[in-house]
Length: 447
Image 1 (tube, rainbow, N blue to C red):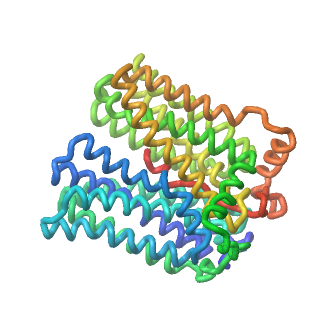
Image 2 (tube, rainbow, N blue to C red; image 1 turned 30 degrees about the vertical axis):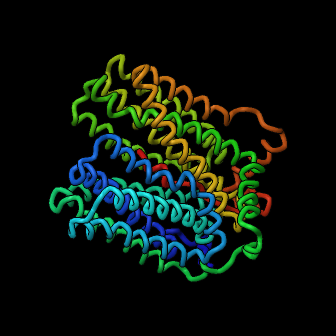
Image 3 (cartoon, rainbow, N blue to C red; image 1 turned 90 degrees about the horizontal axis):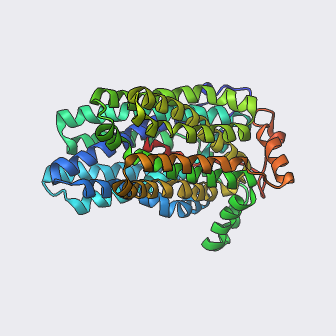
């Protein structure tokens, strides 16, 4: 099946290296496409705040609504073929915009359709690749693999906007989208080079005889039955809701309330990527030393506490406090996300990978636009600072639910299982069917 032997370093494992390359290419494609589409809408079609916001919301909406169905598709279709087709279609969808722009026929209907289709393909691919990772690397290497893939994706997030900005400046927004389409084409070729064994059925994939509703229920049952996973999803959804409101208000608050110069605002944004890389470097060692469950319980509240630094900036030392926020939140949220992802991969049966990933991704994604829209509406009424304080408080309370007592047997089993990532297959926690799974990552790119 292409799984890496435990004694082979991941840097020498070809299928895993292909996934790392795919993460870089895909992230560059998404970042370039997002920037170029937004600029085309504003400069080419005269979009106002509502039009630009609607374009962004439409890229998230498919992930929030359709991720469980995407998960069902992932569990029932040949995996390599699915990711190749999805990425190839992504290249064609994005490439249709510069073609229409060159012909003078690009319009709002086209841009909105591209946003919806691109978002659908992006989040389908996200679920599929999460399901693929436990089939590519050994169980004991999942933590290191998730850290490395996050690093690859972050590299694309740093370089993508810069590349997109340069291309838009030189060629215009429409032609710049060709670069996004080309990046997706490269991604498709890398995915096509994955082992053909990924197209083989796993576990009880013969359960395709189940009705779609029964199959979806089987995936949701894992989320309900796994005590750790259920707690993580609920706390992460609440944390995303609070941080989504803070993210939506951040630029307006920094410029209008704090009068932060443009160079300081740019520096604050740039330091988040650096903090993410630090989080990636420490995630593996920290999670191995404390255990995955303990790492998640510690880092989620730390991320919630960091959000209080945003409204605290209104009291003085604005640049220093926002800088500190990005450092603290970037590190804590990264370690938390990697630990949560690895835990999710360890507790989910192999044949349910896609469906569980779909349900988790939907829960995490739907809270981001809800938090952003709710925070914006309340801020117009109450002001930015009260809403930022309330958002941080809600995020912290949600993260703190990880510390609520559970049933003794469940708590003991979860704690013991979370310690076993590097101890050998027999130490890994298993779900009802006994295998592994992965958590939604694309939503993390919103920062």
